[in-house]
Length: 433
Ligand code: GDP
Ligand code: IMO
Ligand code: MG
Image 1 (spheres, rainbow, N blue to C red):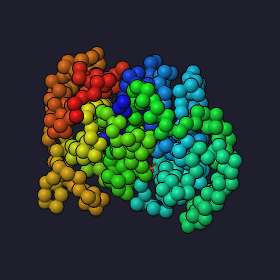
Image 2: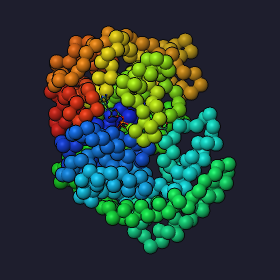
Image 3: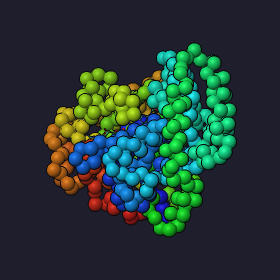
Image 4: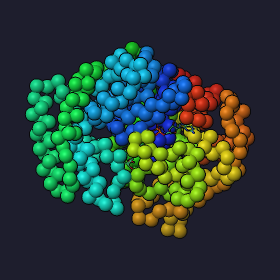
């Protein structure tokens, strides 16, 4: 009776989609617990077919795996419809294994306009939001004004929509922002038909019943721990709890149901959008990482900022999440670097620390690096962890020692099978905690 959790330990885009897709075969249900279409989870399947999932959990390609969009997620019917269309074109029957919690909140067209208006108003201080309406929708949720998926079943849905829209229009008068609501609204209402045709469930009962029936469940995080609303680099964060605590509120699970917490980190680090990034290499090294790693946003196409792995930030994420297992992705991106660096501490106001300072926004700490020789070879064809090049093993051993969590898997390419699982990585077995 446990739910394993898989989530990002950095600023998002760690390769969660790829790893969830790989692991989904081991689970009966994959559930998203927070975030919304700001997420972009890339899956590359047989034949190199690429899919980017925004709201739909990454277990969708396994027909026997149920996929739940939990109450903690915010749903834009329009993006969801487009996502479903692409999957149906690929031959999937979505109605068979996709479920949506009635308590998930709806992103309205005016939420997206408010997001854009607020970002424009902030000018230089903008968050770098994906402009998918995430912030305004969660604001209405906590402000107790929001509309939920289950409200679509209510006869007064349109009246309630109109009431909330009018409130948004009054708010928009605060901003010098031009917009055209009608075409967005028309498309949004049309997409409601598709949403209504999906399986609505009382998510908290749905998932707890499944647990009681002995089903194996994987909770799939979106964004990353450093974008968490409480613990991330505030205010340059998203509007939900991206850490493992969000699994309980975002799915209706008790803390006692949580099993393994699988934390994912790239072998280096990226960030997209504004905000502090201590190990950023805003130079040729960063450009090389971007090029080798194809570091462009899966949702917005924006170039991602790149830099070295940041151990103080990872230690912080591991602490907050209770990570039991580590997955290191995009190791292949470093294949041809002569030198690889890892930040082991920060120097701030003359002091050295490996803890995250309260505020990184005014003074960026200076990273202290440890350097490693590269392995300068391709990893293709390597199937066993022990057969990895010695210099890479040294780097991985160092990460394990510093982070005090075992590395159970490394990802060595974007495709599903480009994953090297270590022997102890039998994820159906609960380790001693
Ligand atoms: P997510 O948001 O955490 O699911 O990650 P994204 O899909 O936004 O970004 C990860 C990107 O890296 C995608 O383009 C993946 O196809 C790609 N990717 C994932 N794992 C690997 C890997 O091990 N090596 C390489 N080269 N690319 C990877
Ligand atoms: P996945 O799930 C990377 C970033 C945005 C912005 C900040 C707030 O693919 O890892 P928002 O749209 O939530 O108002 O944006 O958070 N951000 C992400 N960065 N990966 C994501 O998701 C992200 N979702 C949001 O760039 O800086
Ligand atoms: Mg992504």
